Image (cartoon, rainbow, N blue to C red):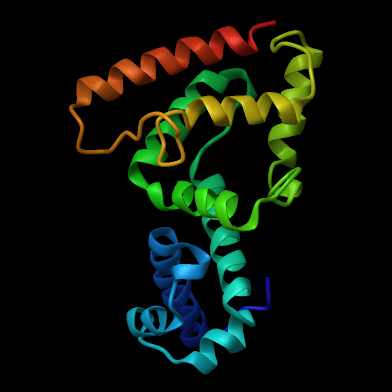
Length: 192
């Protein structure tokens, strides 16, 4: 990601650009997104967008990195409570469906293989999982694979689902039912 401005005014402008671009890319993908709509929503100009982010693809990558970072920072992680963390991921997908939509666009337009994101963001999680495995509190196996499985289970009803997309406006009882099922299934999947 390019070096973002450090002045308060520059930081505010780049934040507006990232927020506007997140909405635009989530709705339209990389190919369908329009810089003109982003600059109008961010109340800025093309020179600032390109100066901060290089090009449209650089802006998309910065948006995804920003959303992943904010998502990671917002969800407390405890390797001894992977079922609870999975439920928090489910809830976050309801509150912020944009990140999952961005990930769906990555799958459609960039067709990545292997790990999609900088694994250093997940390193503390992977270390905590490995330590819990060594202590016999989690099933053995590759910590990355275990984390990937839990994320996939938590995202089963997300906008990236191939079966059903849950929304925040559904009856609370439906979400409670899914949370209970998710918590139980993750607990069974990660049990030693």
